Image (cartoon, rainbow, N blue to C red):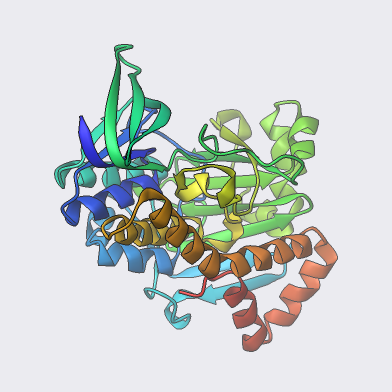
Length: 376
C-alpha cells in the first residue's frame, strides 16, 4: 500500500482535503477510527463562508438534497435577553446564506464523495504510529473490525484526527470547556435561523437540521459540568436556562427524553506547530470558539490550502513550513480576537451592554462580526 498522501481522520478537514487531493490526481488514503455514520459534538451550523467553500467543491446541492437547511439569520442573546441579529444576505461574506446539517450526515457525505473520487477509504481503521523512512513515512495501521495490522507508505502524512489526536501535544494549564449536544425530534426554533444564548460560564446554540430535528449544543466550564453530577436537567438549569431568551425559546425541551453526547476538555487556540514533526489539520491543529460559527469554515479553507501545497513541490518539511506559516498569518489575529470576545462573554453585564449598543449601531455590529473572521 503506497500513496502520495495518507490522512488520519475523516471529519470535515480530513474528508475535504482527501477530496481536493483526489481531484488533483494524487493517490490518497483516508482512515477514520470511528464507524460511519457517526455523531459528533458540534453546533452543526455552516457559516456563509463555509457555504462558499462547499459551492466551490460542488457539494452544496448534495447537502441540501440530503436534508441540509438553508439559514438566513443568526440571533445572539445576552443573559438578560438583549438580542443582536445578523442577516446573512447583507453581510457580504461568502455566500448569502448559511446551512444547518448534522455532522453525522455532513462528514459521511464528504467521506463518500472522497471514495467516489478514488480515495482509498476505511472506517474503523486506526493509525497507530508514523515513522520516517527516507523521503517518506511508514504508517502502522490497525483494522479495528478484524484486529489485522498492516503498513502503508506515503510521501506525506496528514494528521486530521481531531483534538484527541495522539500525534500532537495537548496544551496544559489552559482554560477549557466541555461540549454537550442533543437532537430534539421537532423544530423548537424557526427553520432557517440559528440562535446563540450566552450565560455565565459558557453559551449554547440551537438550529434546525435535517428531518425537522433541533440541534442543541452547549459549551460550559468544567465546574458547571461537575456541579451537575451527571444530571442533565441540573446542567440545563445551571447553563443555558440562565439565559432569559433561552428559557422562553427552549421551553419545550424535556430533559428526561434527551440523549446527550459529550466531549472535552476543549481548548480554543492554535497549537504550537513546532511541537511535533507532522502536518496537522482541523481540530488537531487548533480549535476556534464555536460562537464564531467559523470552525467548519477553517477546516474547509485550510484543507483546500493544504491540498494546494501537497500538490506542489517540496519536501515534507518544506510543505509543512509553508502551510503552517500561511495558516498562522491568516488565523492568528482571529484567534486572539476570539479570546478577547470570550473574556467579554465572561462578564454578563458587559456583554449585555455591548449587545444593547450594537443593536443600534451597524458599525459596531459589523466590527464585532469582522473580529471573528479570518483575513481570506
